Each structure stands twice: as structure tokens, then as C-alpha cells.
Amino acid sequence: MDFNLGGTVYSSLATTGMYSITPDGRGTATLNVAAPVNQLHFSFYVVSATEAVFLGINARSASIADLSGSVLAQSGQPFSNSSLRPGGAAIFDLTGQVAGHAVVSVGRIVTDGAGQVTEGTLDQNSAGTTLTNFPLTTANYAVDSSGRGTLNLTFNTTQTFVIYVVKGDGGSTPDQRSAFLLETTASSTEVGTGFLEAQSSSPLTTASIAGRFHSGTLSPAVCGCAGISGVADFNAGAGSFAGVRDRREPSGDSRVFPRENWSGTYSIADSSGRGILQIASPSPEHAVIYAVSSSKFVMLIPEAAVTAPVVTVFEK
Image (cartoon, rainbow, N blue to C red):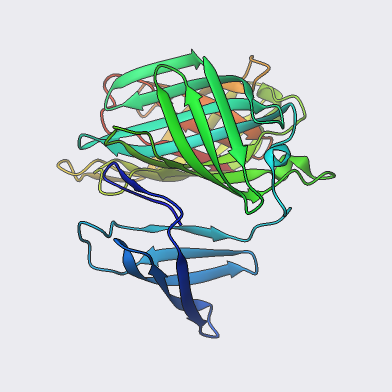
């Protein structure tokens, strides 16, 4: 297990534990982790035989952060660099904090299956300081047989990550490749986590995003960011969308807007699957989207006025 506690990184900590599950699918788990983390306690809910949602129930301390997230079964072992398929594109999303403010990113990389990342782009909002369609300079990665690996990406700065591959190159199902990301950049107080998943090998255009999508936000822990959940119908022929959402403003404002109508336009003209979404109502906003497939895309608003940014995920 790997941890990043406020910029102090602990790598490959030995971990054992035990768990129990009641008939209704709720469970509890205890993980015994090497120092300084020691013992972690969780409650969780089973989604399926390959997925559960965990919530940390320890008291917060200098060595125990607020923890929550998904636990996913691995497949495709043994893993190697080729688990990230040659020529395979992947979309990533990252949420984190640095110096007390939120930093969120979305982007796309292409791996060669041999330890190199051959191309990539990044969009980022760091408390209102933004990067848009920023090109990758250099990058490399390495994956061991357990699926644990490292990923080094240089866009405007160099960021390093520990990765844990969930699904490797599945041969007949290569579009299922995915991995968890944990930022481990040296001499940085930024703490970021995220997910990397294979982009569909089929061309993705405006026409690919059609029908009803449900959405929800990802944000750094205790960032005081806005929370949004909603549904919208996307009309590919017109390049427009309309729907309803529930929105909670960041802490300090605390206003809640239930069942808020929202609408706008969208387009994907780039062969990479990167596109633009323009929100017209309830207020104008400019967003960047990256299509993962015809049933999923991620969104970020790279505007200076958005100082508590989030990543929004849309899925059918």
C-alpha cells in the first residue's frame, strides 16, 4: 500500500487485514499497515463481486487522512509494461490539494506498451490558475507483475505517480484497461489521486455523445468545493443538451439549488476526443470535456473565476 500524507510519501507499506460482510451487503474491514499509518478501519458496501465502496471511520490524525473510494478486483495478471497496450490512449482525471486549495486535472495520454508515453494533453484548474490543452513534453512508466508501477508526466511541471493497474490489456477487450493514480512528486505538498482508463479505440466525435447522461462531481477531500448531481439529454444532431441538476455551492456560501434547469451546447472536433461544452443556463460557463467512450466523458471548467474547481463525470 502507498500513502501520501500532506506531501510525505510512504511507499509499498506491508499490509494485512480482515473483513466481514452482512447479508445486506454492508461490511467492515480492518487493515494493519506498517508504520506510521498503523491500523485503518473502514465500513463498506458491496456493489458486485468485483466492486465495493469504502469509507474510512478512523478519527483523523497526522498519520490518518480522510479516506473513501472504490475497491476494484484486478484482472489480467501477471502485469507488465505491455498491460498498457501499445498505441493505446487513456483518459485520466485527478483531484487534489496544494497549499490549502483545490487542484483538478483531466487529460489524455498514449502509451507504447514498452514504458514510454508518446503523446498527451492536459487541462487543469488550480484555484483559478488554468492550463488548457497543454502538450506533454516527456513521460515514461513502469509496471511490475503485481500491477504496481510508476508514471512520470511532464507538462508544465514534472509530476510522478504510483499506479495500480486494475485491468490490463484484455486482448479481446482492450478498452477496459484502467489504473488508480496517486501523486508522489518529490518536494511537493500537492496530494492528488485519480483514475486512468482506456479510451475507446473507435473514433469519438460529437455524434458519439448522444442520449441521456447522469453526472456527478469528484473533488478533493475537505476542499469546500461545489457539489453537483444531475441528468441531461444530449442531442448530437443539434450539438445541444438540456436537463436538470442539484447544486450545492462551496462552503462559506452553503446555498443549495435543487432541481435547477441547465442547458447549452457541445462539440468534439478533435480526433483525440477532447471537446468543448458551453453552459448557457443557468449562467454562462466554458468547460472542457474528454470522451472516454460513447457512454462516458469527463468535464472540467478552466476559468479563473472558478477557484474551487471539480471534475464532473458523465455516464449513461
